[in-house]
Image (cartoon, rainbow, N blue to C red; front, side, top):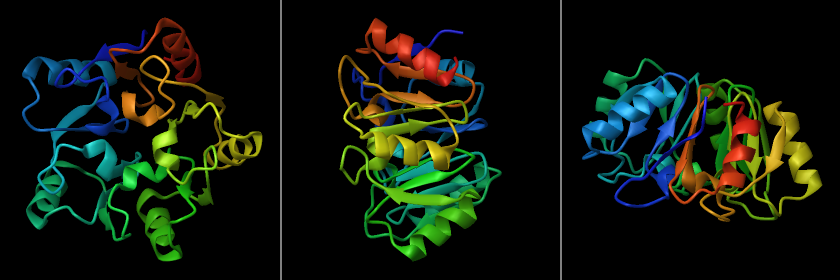
Length: 221
């Protein structure tokens, strides 16, 4: 099965608009029907139209694995109610002051690696909602660990300047092989340009052939 390529609004930064696990994909409103069908087919998931505080930034404002979903505190009551009606998973608000929670947490079903700026109270919510152990750390000495890593139960990619110590720490908590990679022809903020689950991966249209080869090997798709 090959890695697939897609764009949204003529942008390769697809990762900021979508979030997927092995059952659902959160998609922005006003997405054309043909692209919804493609996403459903490529990832073998149920598409769920979702907005967070009226925005289309599901990737930046949510975290999910196959046990649960965390959403940014800026979600409205109506949006949260609609999401809970459509998804058969625990959904909780992460009350951290950092609204773009997708940028500071990376997770699979085996563990979560979170930014050093996350509080103990927030870590407890992450553990309980996503049913994982949690480790704090950095990537390439940056706190935006969710932007700079992407993980599934098959493997993970990380910013090419991540240290050996960071890679070892991340690999230990996520329990998968991790490789440095870029997306969209050299972009090291890997989460910005990929949607991935255990079934398949979808990348931004600027992603190069060598990048596709690495992603296919790491995620086993």
